[in-house]
Image 1 (cartoon, helix red, strand yellow):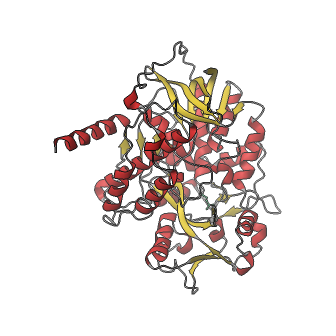
Image 2 (cartoon, protein in one colour):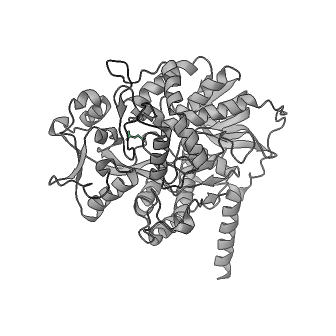
Image 3 (spheres, protein in one colour):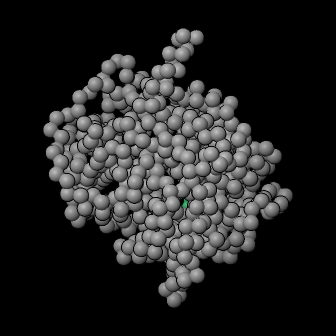
Length: 527
Ligand code: SIN
């Protein structure tokens, strides 16, 4: 087995991973590993932009207020304040690093508007190509300064005596590698890909979160899954239609032209995403309606939204008719690995940033265009922290003992659910509207036989399926525990938010879950 040593291992190549790499690379040896190609990240696909306080009329307090309101006050207030205060600096840094944000003829940044924002504060690039422009600039900067290994699927963390020393990985042809590192940063994205109806093109199978969970790291808020209202579904693929289209005047309507968001919320089509998505779900699933995004009122649509125009053309939808068929789909996951302001997790020398982290800044529902911002802000915090610590750690001299390598802890691919089955259980029972019977059905189907099997001898596909099934089971069981509705988590059997649930987090640890599963199994034997 090949062993590669480095000072910092970063798992994931989205905005958080590459910004951390960029900040660290001047002082540390950094290796970035990524499952697929370096461009295959949700950050690269991001259309909307980066929310930032730019004008005198705006303030960080106003951005904070919108973020807390969208998150239904489930947010970690201190970290959220840090997030919104940094927007301007992030835009300046990225501009210095070569990102050309869209500006008017006088060089002033053009600011868009998206759901839940009371002001125009979305900084964008190339119209709706912000993610691509930001990531191209970052890739250009880091590619010669850090080693980037593509096609590496991280399987499990390397942990000895309560310290993380890197990760076990498999490459595309199945050979196993160990990346040993003083510091390991998980930047591997979220888990919206456990749903079939999803905007996430590149997997989002929760693998970074599952690895941390298996290593005993605490997770939180997994029930909070954000559904984006406007996903366009073609025969083969789903594609996001950015909320910025509604910011420019796009309106959600039914086939007969009736306006969907009228009278529902003061911000109408730009209400927070949970509210718009639920309304659309009602029309589509309860009233059997088709929903359209009416873009007829938007001037110069093709120039403003070249990405959406090309997606529609590929899907055979004519922009000229002015009506794009849409429905909601899983887009972003607020839950993940609990971290402090410096990205530290409950395991020494393991950090998490970006969507796989649960910093708490998004609360129960993320405000639009706060995710690239979160990735950038906490990547810097984490890199600064690592650079400031000069702790002498002894390198791991021996390999961890493989005590899990016993037959009862092996899994076999044929006992795992198919990806399609996992996704359809999630769409059906843990989607926009949830209730106990459906959640119970999904829980029974999804519970893996063991939560910490030996995975190193498994093919890539089995590890992916195991992660997705674990992530789905964790999500469903967290949904069951939260007996109220808050933000993106809506229970038809508990439709109101409850005082006793305010600021209460559902934390998950593999140790507690294993003992609960063992108790349940014992109870079944005795009954
Ligand atoms: C969008 O462009 O609508 C998505 C932006 C985001 O998820 O914040």
